[in-house]
Image 1: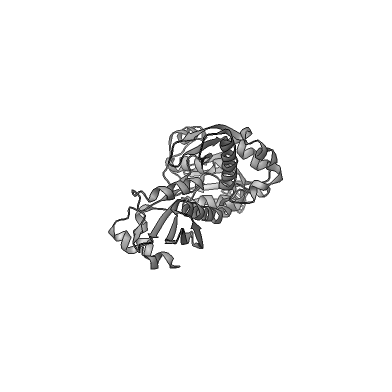
Image 2: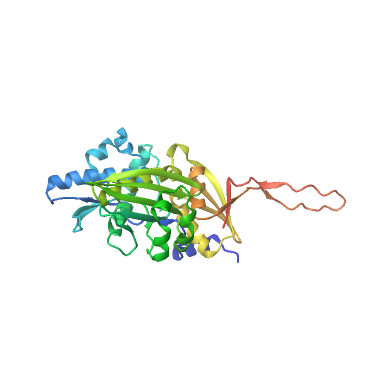
Length: 349
């Protein structure tokens, strides 16, 4: 089926595709716990919310100290659209930052940012209590709440397993602390996540400690975390994971260039998914020919490649568009010649 750009635009507005990567909802909404609703407490929580947001968008703990953000640090209200209180627990100040003005401030500061399209993470989390009992955190359990809050706080799309018997047998302390994800792969397949996060946490006196491994795209990250309780442990661990992941997907202002992107093998649903994936790159539709679409985008080639690979597209070798030779009676046929330069990047669904 051949689509015109006009028909395609209408399709993009009405279709969506459930991909592996997820769009983080409420990326610019931050909840910061508060003890009271006094003006001083609200002011302090607003400052913490700004720090949380900048770290969530950049993955860089030093970004908030950028001199170009001094005015925003002094008066965060200039990028806040509204705030209110969430009863919790815990009781929190809910701050809604304006995405447009926030992104503009970060760009002007020359900071690399991470978009809302992020890898889905399946978390295998085993808790060892002080009494010697072990429990796998399942999707419907109360122990899942601190993990979900921490993931949202750090801007990560976290999924949790159901925690049935087969999963409990696979998610042992030995497997979660091992460097090979193979023992978890079979029980993870039904969740269709991009990354596996294996956590073995245990209570040690008055604090919690954990070892973790993260597997994504053939790369492995590992680390440790600790906290005074499960909530602070979860937040510290999710922060560490975010800081490891962010550099793979950051859009670096200084590295932005105009890129010609060709994507082959599209369906209507794929066209819609492309619109969502390419939105942070200011995509301009150039042409549609059957199941092949060409966009002009602005950004980093490395980040664009990472985003498309995250959505399970396969990169193929670019080649120039070649015109068919025109036969002229009585003259030898000239060899075919390229009529257009090859795209910078070519991907196929």
